[in-house]
Image (cartoon, rainbow, N blue to C red; front, side):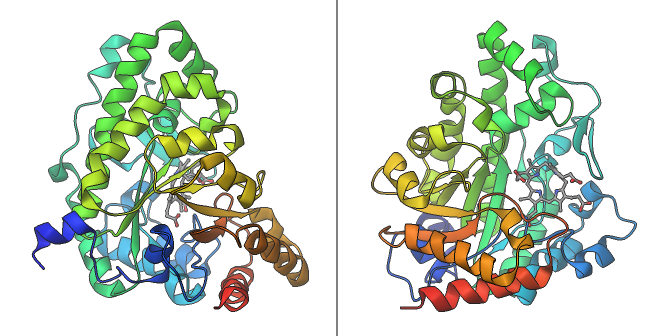
Length: 354
Ligand code: CP3
């Protein structure tokens, strides 16, 4: 198949993997499982290769990205790899002055709050992130039939970091801009949608076989505000990559009241956190979409029997769904015991075998 038609059908070497079949709501031999933040500080082999290399710099070294992305696949036997990068990498690539501070997260030197600031968000092209193209190519060659998930931050979550200048509990500057100057807000989100869509396209064109849009902090909004102030930009991102035929996953934390709208924005798979059982999440999302989730990551600190009991409850809530991808309800916590994750993968595979 030519590279072009492969992009149009999403038919990578991983096409028939359980993960991609579940995303398409096709029958699977077992429920596929992967973990958000499966690569990272919970793994000693990660801490070793990252020693002395700042986070953002590590994202720009294709061999290192490849090694880190493969680590959890080797160790845990998960059904998919997620590209090692960060949601702020495309912002850095267009010249925003930001850094990722250890134990804190992304910090933006000069927050974006005025019309004049918008000019700093120029469009992203593939030439801005050659290291992403190279790393995805290396990875898909290594992974073979194991799918690689590309990802990006959604416009709202990126805007939150840009407007606040760093992580925020209440998103007060962000909401002040959204409610106080809705036109400027809409223009900001529109620029971010273009950057995000371009970043996802780079990953898909280099070989990623699914993409996840992380709108981690959008659960801070009420449905009416989501619909008016966020959904148009997120929908623009999903539309921009619809033609590739790769599954599009949409995830946020604390989004119980937004699940229907997040599906409507254009996702094929909706991720839920642990606050809403998956059968109820599926009811809110409506027909025609797969679900991903949703074990509380903190459960992994409990004894094995308790973890298995909670994991079995996730599987039984999902038993009537057409497509289910097992995941945590948010990222792996950095102090999680790696063996607990390996055991969880085995448990989900065995318990769901058909
Ligand atoms: O394994 C994977 O999931 C792939 C790698 C990945 C990272 N960040 C690497 C990373 C992914 C998918 C992300 C996405 C991301 N980044 C999100 C969305 C997912 C979520 O958790 O809600 C968000 C909100 C960010 C912003 C960000 N970057 C935060 C909040 C942090 C943590 C700060 C800290 O140190 O606790 C980062 C840094 C970061 N990104 C780390 C990793 C492995 C930790 C830094 C390090 O290891 O040095």
